[in-house]
Length: 465
Image (cartoon, rainbow, N blue to C red; front, side, top):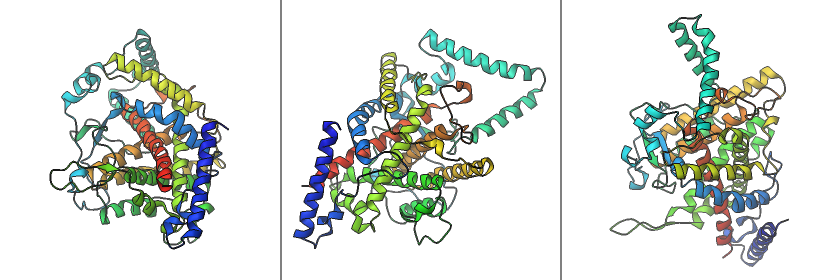
């Protein structure tokens, strides 16, 4: 065991001892009870061969510092999104009017040269090096050879049908509804200027979003499970359905950690500058066992589960990402980003206890494929619910994190045959694609999870004061 992990374990034991003393010294306060601390957030993570301490150490020491630096780079900080799509499920109840709900978009002039519309249209496949150009030419030739024979045998009309069929087939591997990149409502957002934090968006509108996700889109046990899904009721479900619930719960938990860590600490009335920071009471209200019917620590564990799922997706996509140029038009920074991505992917691939996605969707092939498609469609539906979020900033980060998770699921399960490992290293690039938006959301969504786990260590220390 490393010195860092010994210190973390020792620190957690001290917290538990402190909570124990408080419990018997003053039983009147739930915050002073043993359950009111982080003592339950330990041990093995459900449905994974890994424990909490191992993730804390690996993330906080090796991944989080690298990832935080990487996400400040231009390639990852600019996200193209449509925040004006109407809600497809219920009548829009209006936008949040609170100032902090708004999103500041970028003008074309503020974008890096390589992300501007005209540049992308004119030089979409232009790269820096001759090797990169040769690689693109080889891929194009491969596609042309595949279509060349067909061109002599089918009409232009039939060829257009063929392209539509291919798009339909490609869509079957997507876990999110794909936005039209050519829409006039698409806008670039600088994520560093629009951070995820508490905006004051709450009430019926916010509650309806999560109610729809959990009650209408998460899988249910066959027998009665009470009013809500929880850590106990999901245990009787199959692995795939448990994974779906834990992933959604983990995302919800991560968002709540961010809202507690970047909370509005003072009123912005008058001419004062808003002060944002950690709110321990808010964190305890969301996760204390006595206030959540013992669900708080289980929700925190689901955050760790989702972290491991997306960590595995990045490890699996590493051969593909290693060939990406991360092009923005600034050669020096783009070279730096490629080196930084290569470095963090090496660290990620060396993690010893990755989530094992090959154990999912096994057994009878027909039943497994039906379950996989149901799994995918449930998640696609959740991606559409993000267009019903009334707060623009919440919608922005909800869409980004859902699409990032959807990209992770695409990597883990695209083309998966029952019982057969899907190897991106062996698959031709023309048969598996990630758009820039998918790459940006994948890294940023994982960055949110990494940041949440790092914040938990700070909240542990605050709870011990």
